[in-house]
Length: 298
Image 1: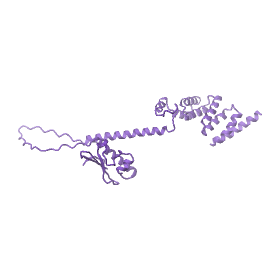
Image 2: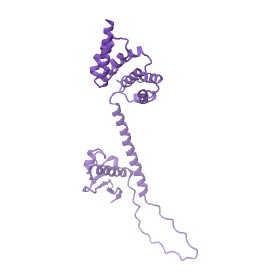
Image 3: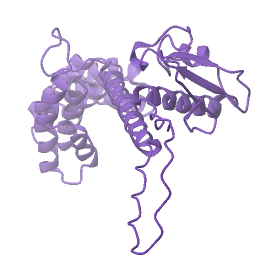
Image 4: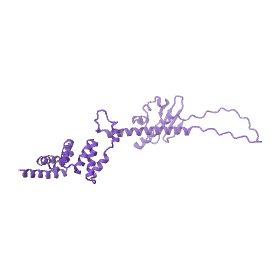
């Protein structure tokens, strides 16, 4: 009777391994379960049953089978590695690390254990990630949407960086267009004829540089236009740029923009190769930018 049971378990195990290697894990599970039942001390039956359950998306059953296999062979590197990888996928990082390190101690050439260990976050990394978890998330587990959330945070940081660079560029441009101080008067030369009396003339005050807020807005428009043209092959209207949220909301409405010194934004006829955007300040000063990217006073 025992010989027939052992023979049946061996046959089931052989058929199951063939199915498992051919990617038919679902067919292997009942055969491996039979082998493990007929031969409860058969390490291979429990180990491969754990592999089959893991392949079919049954993590709890896979973990139970792998732990039963390790109870029979506590230092088997293949079983330690398989359980470590399973625990890694279940976000049980501390125990996963212990299993994978044990697998490497048993077999330093186990590349799968080494590769999975490199994917495990360090304790300090998990502490940072935990700051972004919702209150309902259990410790030690990360929600499936965390990678998308991280990408959103990185994208927001990139947007802030672009705005800061535009502000800095606007400040530099304002300094560049600021009027220079007049040259000093040359000293009088001894014996030279006296200069004729200067005729009093009314001098116009030097032009004021473009306000930084206005310069920043116009440079943001220029950057948005270049981006739109690279994607669409033409320049856009203010309404199109505003709809894409690439420039300030309300810019195309014709109403004053508080963040732009209450300037009223307007545009000329937008062509495929050219555009003009103007910002008129409450005092009547008008600043413009076109496809050349240079701000000018009109």
